[in-house]
Length: 143
Image (cartoon, rainbow, N blue to C red; front, side):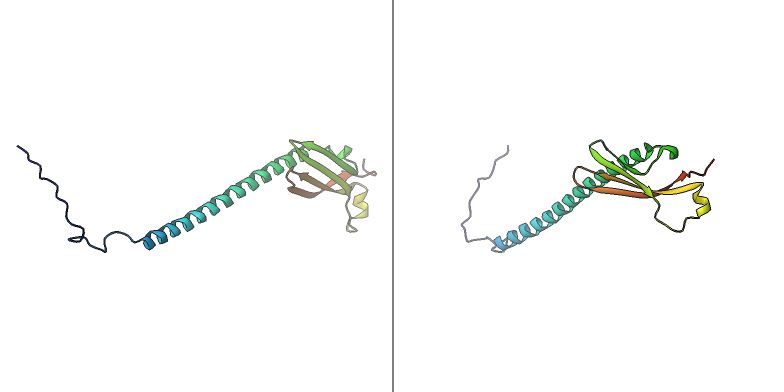
């Protein structure tokens, strides 16, 4: 049959090794290094979250700009002036004006007149996206 041996406690100073275990300073240094690593990881994650928020905002601005461009009137009814509105909570404006250049051929200007078109989209947070382009409109001398 199995007989357990009785546990005998040894006196405090007999076989204890004083270098066994960790000192308080070693534990504090380890905790400090772990805290620095966690702070760096937290900072990196916060930067990623801000960056993804900016990307989402930019995509929403681009989608609104594409919708505004798609909805522009055709060449015949596009007149000089400003169009504006609100789409999905984002304000947009389209500024249409004459092309400011002396390089336009006067004979071609009778048939086609270039116009500058500036499309601007503002998000509620203040972000801004602009697109400047040129559109040709049939001139008054065109048949």
